[in-house]
Image: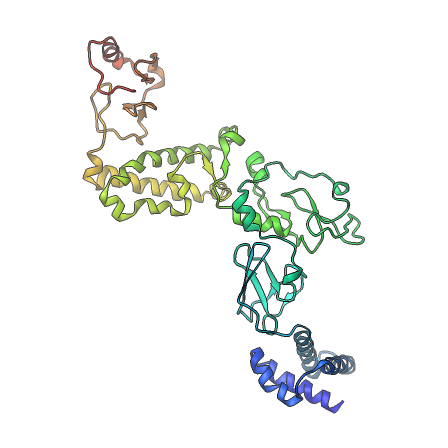
Length: 418
C-alpha cells in the first residue's frame, strides 16, 4: 500500500504541470519500473485506494480535492496502458476517409465512433481531412461510415422533401446508419429523428446537432435550425456553399413572396452584363475586380443558381449589402474610372438621343437576340411591335415613326439581329 501511495504522489507532481506523455514516461515510469500486464492491476488497486480516501476525507477539504485530482490522473494512466501509443502512421486511408494524425494535446474532442472524450494528452487520435470525422486510433478500424465528402463529390444535391419520414418499422426498428436496435421508448436505445433525412438514429449516430434544412428554406422560407444526425450535419456543412439550388425551377413563386430575391436577381444580371467589360479591360484585369466575388464565383457565371449560404445571407441582409457595394464598385469603374470601358457605351438604337447608355443601367432595355441597347419605356406609353429581323422590344410613342420607317425599308437599321 505504501508503494501505491508513493505512485499517487508521483503522478500528482508530474501531471498537474501539463507535462507531455513523453515526459511522463521518462520521469514517472523509472520510479515505478517498466509497466507489464500486472501493472494494470496495481493501477486498479491504486484507484480503489483513492476512492476509499475520497470517501473518508472531510468533504470539500483540500486533501479531498487533491485526492480527486490524483484519481483522475490514475484513470488516465490506466487508459493509456489499455491503449498504448505506438508509432502509428501520420496518414491513413479508410472507407474514403483520409485520416491525419493529430498533434494537439490540449483541445477537448469527442470520438465520433465511441462517443467518449478524446484525451489528447495521452491518447492518439485522427481527423479526416475531408469530413472532419474524429476518432481514437483504437476506434479507427471499427468505423463503418464512409467519408461524407465523397458523397458530396458524387451526389451534389439536396433532399428537397421536408423531413421525409417513413417510420421505424421500415427501418426494422434499427438505427438507419449503424443498425443498432432502437425504439421511441428508449429501450434498448433511444430513437432520434433527423429532420433532414426523416430517418431515425441511435444516440451514437445522432448527437442532437442542429442545422438549417434546405427544403424548409426553399419551400417555407424558414431558417430555424433543426436536429440532424452527425452524417447529415457534416453533409450540410460541406454543401452549404455549393450553388446547386435552381430556385426558379424548384419554387418560382418564392420570387413573388421574397422581395429581396428579386433585388438580388437584378444585381446578378447586371454583374453578368458588366463581366464582358472586365475581361476585355487591362486595367480591370490588373485590379482583379472580379475577385470581389471570389467567394461566390457562381455570381459571375449565371444568375439563377444559389447556394444555401446565399439564401441564409440574403435572409439576414448581409448578401444585399455586400452585393450592392460590389455592384457600385463595378459600375464606377466602367462609367467613371476607365476611359476604355466608357468608350464601350451605347447610343440608343432607336432615337439616337440622350446620354451614353450601358446595358446594366436602370433606364435601359437590351434586346435578347442582338444585344442592342434602348431607353427603357414608360408603362403608359407602351406600344407592342411585332418581330422584325429578330428584334422584339417595347418602345415609346415618340419612337414609333422612326422604327416603323426603319422596318418598312425607308431607313437602314443600325443593328440587325441574326
